[in-house]
Length: 270
Image (cartoon, rainbow, N blue to C red):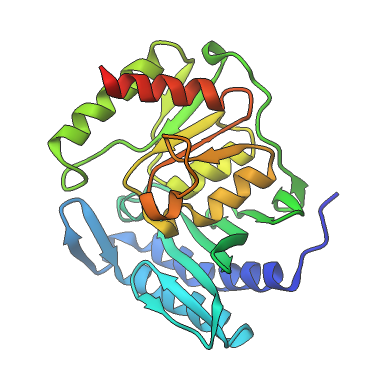
């Protein structure tokens, strides 16, 4: 049975559903979208900007004093300096503009420097992942739990592969070593192109774990609380707890968190 949604979660879900209606229409007309380049292999579309504006307007109407940290619009300080929304309007933009139906909106609430609520909405299949501190994590109305697998050779892991314009050449080489080490002991690695959904899938027990570096706060804020409320462990690759600052993340079920982290760290030393 689903937990009773708080007022903030209700506001977040309402905003995501409202913004998704136009976004789904945009996705259906992806060939006609206006696309401009933010850098090599990193795109922003008219749909990104429009979706962010709709989310911001809806959340600001409900909570006029809260600030924002926005992927496209940057930081906006609110009258209540202790609370802000962290928003990625389309996590998986490259998938979106290529007509691949794997992308999501990500909304997190940060209070006094701590993420207290998160919503990740995958609009094409209407999967609403949500979590709130102390209340658990849910997919639509069903409680989510991380997987219980304890053997690496039975487990699959998600990651993000560096690409042109993302990281230095040395980072690419380091990642290949990490991936090779995990490939050698696991049942497989998946690269789906949306860190927010990767984290939601860990929370839902679909993936046994996820790791990546070089991420932004809006990529992972909602997913961090989601995995933790589903019973998982989330740290940086080195075990610290500064994911939003460093962009490094290791989110795994508690049986495998230490082992996967050790494998990845050891690969980096070779």
